[in-house]
Amino acid sequence: MPDDHIIGSGMTEQELKLASFWVRNRILLRQILHGSLIAFNVVLWLFVLWSLLDWLAISYPFESRIPLKIATNQITAESLVAATPKPLQPSQVYVFDSTSGRRDMLVELSNPNPQWYAAFDYKFDISGMQTPARQGYILPQSQRYLTELGFASSTGRSARLIVDNIRWMRIDPAWVNRDYKSFAESRLAFDFQDITYTRDLVIGTQTIGRTDFTMVNDSPYGYWNVELTVILYRGTSPVGVTTITRRDVKPGESAPISINWYENLPGITRTEIRASVNILDPDAYLSSERFQN
Image (cartoon, rainbow, N blue to C red):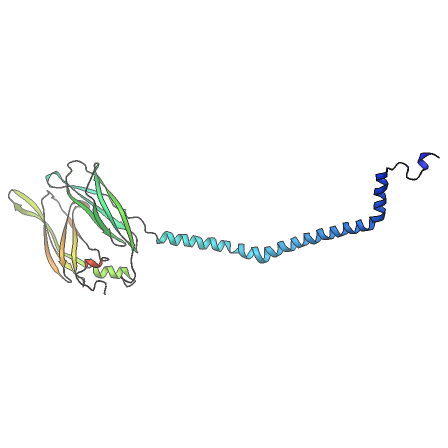
């Protein structure tokens, strides 16, 4: 009989075993395939449902708060910047001829901060020469003159201010009854009356200038020391400066003051006088009731 009519002709033993295994386990294999497809679909739908749950109930509420947190952080950063004191601002430094070839220097320093005052060290640099370091202070939201008088420098018509070692201090609300503006106005109530400048005083062969005025302390507070800065102007330009210190200034005191000017200063059109006292220093007051209204 020809080979192609013999059962199993053309199949190897391995193929016969595989065919026999498929015939005997076909139903089981089909069930395993169906079960795998069902399991895959269950896992896929569980992933889809979890993603929807996470997006709607977990991640979305959290992510929706992110813009608010960013805005809050920006507000906090702005608050921190606002709470940080702004730098002190100096004006142009003026240099005046003094006697014996010396120089007087004047600068106005501004503190733009309403809740911060500062103590610092300062000096002037004129043509590479530096004046002695001095201590200064400035009250909140105020301007103060700083000077160096009679510095031995026969050269140089320009100078710059050097401020070092700034110590910022925040106002204690309890000291100022939570109203620094009223606190300061009631304590810095100095008035300068009958201000005159003349050049008719002759000493020997020299004619010198003279400033006369009356200082009135209109506040109910007395001070151990009050520094007065007196500036002479020719038009709008300052041409001379000096400072004096009045000691033991009583509440309501009125005192006549005279200042002699030995420099040649003709054509003076205006005299400015400014009082400085550290009203935030308890030791500046004569009275023990320093911070009472």
